[in-house]
Length: 177
Image (tube, rainbow, N blue to C red; front, side, top):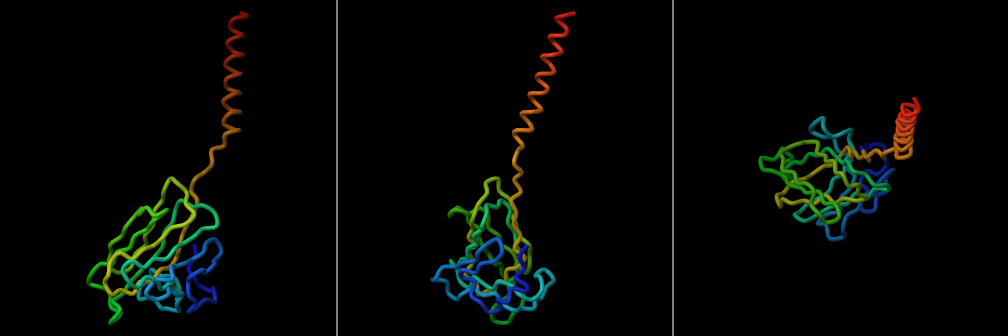
């Protein structure tokens, strides 16, 4: 899990930010550059006081590129009205895309955890702002994992072969008697 604490990156633009297992990036065309901010959350959902502050206008997006493929990803987020920092009365929408295919969208108020699991591992995803309302979103606690467990083929074949030899041997013993 990456909660952006103790990174020494307060105020640093996220474009090209390299963390332990992934890189954060965003296009040059975003309305304001995303940053890691020193921010005290209004809820207990976000961890500590450093969060990613990104996505300010409809169509803005940031990318998460993993060093090794993963098939589970999630994060905590919260957002507030830009004008008075109050919880919004309207909804905020964002979408998650893998290889330009939207895999999920979320519409919510306030603070939440959002995650998904897919059968196909991926190396990058894109988080896109769908709504055009004036919200300040904060992202934290990025969680990811490759949950696919490889099938131990050699051991399976060995067990199958041993069982088959045992059955054939038992059959030959029966015929000899």
